Length: 434
Image (cartoon, rainbow, N blue to C red):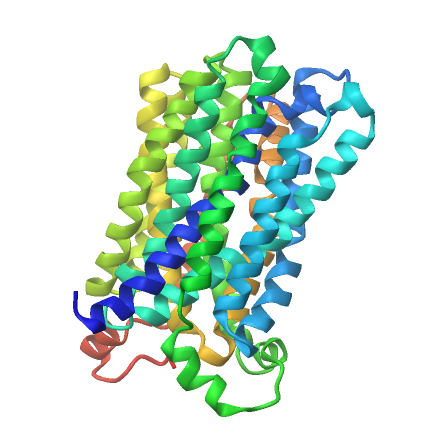
């Protein structure tokens, strides 16, 4: 491998592998919220009430993510990308291991849900900067094929979901009493292996060359977050709008899993395998969409994915009610489509914001919308099903609205891929990648 190729692939690989490990931790919680936490940590409540409370604690992690994104994004733009990614992996790893050791409601009463929420807050604070940092590192390391390189951390998120759900499904095969007693804890405790590996990887990861050249050498005293709001507000709102549809995986994954088990009566383990399959296909689709955006531009891919989801959402719910085979088809197709938005976000965001505010811009845009949309989405969707008497039509309308915001935001944005913009207009892209 040439030195130039090594300079691209080492930081991209380090950010992607760290992302797998950190988001494995984050996604474990969603599976546990459906299958375990509703009975282990919230006392004697009905299954529906327990699930909704568990989803509420799941949403807590999203509420603090903007704070983590703002704090760590500011540090990442001033001090460097590497120290932030080391800090986030430590926060995620330690809090996840602690969840695996946490006594349940029967052992310590209301301290159990209180401590669970506290650890979820720590998880969310670390997650608030993790994906944004990984995208920045990958995007700044692969400037000539930015769509391909910066989509790799997005694929890593799917790999993490696949691993978390798959390992959780494996232990869910245990007899129910053993699974409740200790089996559900093992996937959380396995994070100790991932934590050690992630720290090793990120200690060895170099700082990005673009940060060194464009930011650190300026030696200016400034607040990236303040500059973001004073000079790049329009871009920030466009980036946030695109992420409305970027959160729809929480409908097609977390909510669909809960709905298929609790409302349709599908076996938990078999339903979990559908999520695993969609994660495997979704990881490949994320990279494919990113590579396609290098050829046709970022905007067409994002808009196309959003419009497809608008057209597919009613067939999606029809299919998952026809049996497990159709559930798998529906979840996989929907997830491939939502990856057109999520996967191309990475190069789009990297090119939308200049380097001196890039980490802050990406983290703020993603995490604020994640807190407002992504975190509450499974809970809101569950409540809408209850309000509609068991029907999913209100959830479908919600999906149409979120995907529509993404399509409109991308349409209002400039084409950030400089090569495509140059072909279309004959001029460089109005967004800056420096």
